[in-house]
Length: 345
Image (cartoon, rainbow, N blue to C red):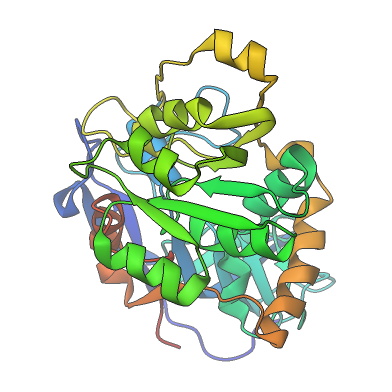
């Protein structure tokens, strides 16, 4: 069943060549591909929005050992979280034309998706694009690993990114008494304080050493770390840890954004003696180990959005042609919050 006349071809973004370092516009190509017809168990989706996210840098770099996603090779169509509308489905499909769904085949105007790989969207969130928010990982880290307690001092590294902009707000809503962030620009630092309620924001690469900045912002130490960066920021956080501090690692941008290395590693020097004497727990967060978190987060996120208790910072990039440049800009730290490509309907 088809809702309306469909084009014969549609555009998609393919990786033209694997880069040596961070990808540039020349490493991608826009291709007109024939529009496929859905077979048994499949649906055709017209994408409305798709997410540009740092994890693509790891997939493009090919260092995917331990990840649930395959590497991207030259000639492959890029993929990632997307929201779209079912436009064609075979008879008997559980998904009907007109249904809004989320899936993982973004970076194309139309996606042929296994019905089992689609999640029908309801009105839990006031705007469908909010289903692309990357808030479930920090929410899961804060509720399942770190266990935020009333009055805790929480440090969020990479606070101006898609994860960090939601992590700080969520920590506050869960009872944190003081929320500190890190970022790379004074402009973003100001926005984090003014718009998202951060109490203090530390600047990466500033003249004042990072550990010294952290000691000034949290003289009594930190109770919880939500880390999206690694590197010296993780080391400094350990130096500021209070007794029994809980560290939840949800990303490794120091490795993913490195000019070389493929995004598959983020080495950091850790004082293991301090880990022991301070009783610090350090755990990596994997969504696959906490299957109930996504639904729980969506329910709470929707309620917080409607009440005005939380914001979803994001930038919308119009047109599929601009997606490769948007990835480059994300790697350069030029955006605040999530980066979403918006397709004309």
